[in-house]
Amino acid sequence: MPAPKSEYSVRPMTEEQLREVMLLNLRCFERGENYTKHTFKYLLTEPQVLSYRAVEESGRMVGFIFVIATAENIAHITTIGVAPEHRKRGIARMMLEHTERSLKNKGFGSIVLEVRVSNENARKLYSGSGYVVTQRLIEYYNDGEDAFLMSKVLR
Image (cartoon, rainbow, N blue to C red):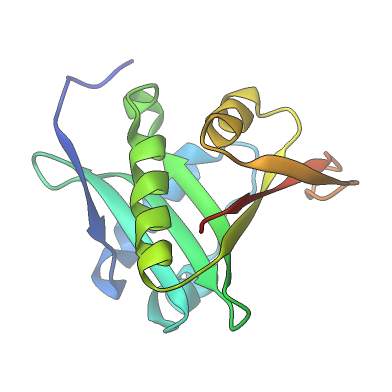
C-alpha cells in the first residue's frame, strides 16, 4: 500500500539511526540479503564510509545508502534501499545523486556497485544515471543469482 505523499530530503546517518536502518533494511530486502547489526554498526562508525538516509517530512527514515570510499579514489555502493510503500517517487535517485555530489566534492573519480541481474528497476535507475555494466558476477548472491558489476566515472 503506497504511503501518503510527502516531501523527502537526504540527511547524514549516524549510529543513532542503527535500529531504524536495521528494521528498514529487513523491509527493503525480502530475499534475505540483509546486513547484520554488526555490519551496520561497522558501516556507521568507519570513517571511510559515507551513509545517508532519506527522510519524509516527519523525520522518519524511508531510504538509506551506504558507500565505502577507498584510498584509490573509487567509491563502492554497498547497499541502497527504499521502503516499499515509498518506492517509485525518485527517492533512490535523489540519494544516489546526493552521494555522487558528495563523492565528487571529495575528489573521487569513479563509483561501483553490484546489482541483481533480476532487479530490472534498479538496473534501469543505474543505467539511467550513467552507470554501465562492466562484468557479470556468477552466483554472486547467497541464493546463487548472478549480479552485474556496474560503474560510473564521476569526473
